[in-house]
Image 1 (spheres, rainbow, N blue to C red):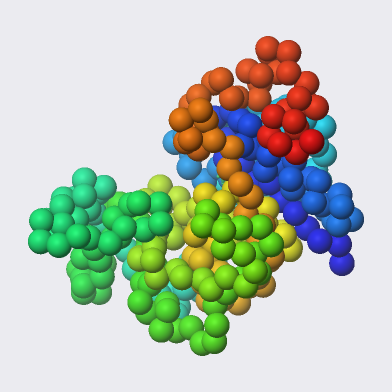
Image 2 (tube, rainbow, N blue to C red; image 1 turned 90 degrees about the vertical axis):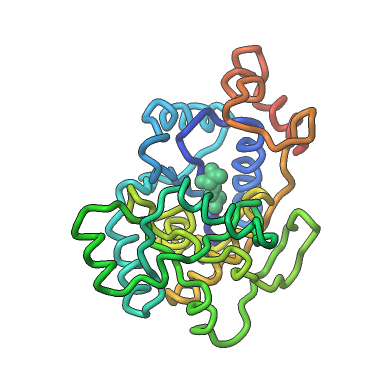
Length: 290
Ligand code: GLU
């Protein structure tokens, strides 16, 4: 079976040089391995994703010289698959609804932080303090019945105790601190992550895990900013009985101030560079591939 690679952008802005590096690396590695190249549109965040950005993704990637298999998987068309995975985790007693707003969570964290430092996840966000975990079944049901919006969270402590054996992955690239080879997954550092947003039956972590399996992805090539997210993906794969792909986390393209590129900075957007006369070959060079 040929290896299967995928590039999985979100259509919430224009692709920049960092995306070009990721897409080109996927395509180069797929070609070298005689593998397949897929494109996935990660559009579960309907408030930020726009059809014009999706159209621009196809245009920018084609201009770069990339090809990919059709049809393209769009996450917004697969909510049933994510609901099924949530149902599996629910049957295992591993998810629970949380009803708080962001502001309420921030206030809870601030209160705890007044006493002692509160743990943060690898992205720097405070861990969910877990208040909704202590609601009774009746309290949950009554809030849901009265229409209070809720997210679904993974009960991390229970999920970790449901695991048997090692949880690790094969890393052929490297994390931000150079981690490579067999890497031990540490999902506990994320706390009770959201698996279904208030406005969609999925979150990034759940959708990416379900989709990589559904698409038969064998090789995940993506930026090292997602290195720690792999711990959550490996945990979900294990809980859902899904296969583990190989992972290659690549270096990030940084701006002049040493920060990760942002979709809101037009200067590094591929279409902006193209408008200023850049060629696909110049883009390959700019991202350090040639
Ligand atoms: N959609 C994610 C992003 O645009 C990438 C997901 C992945 O490669 O796992 O950052």
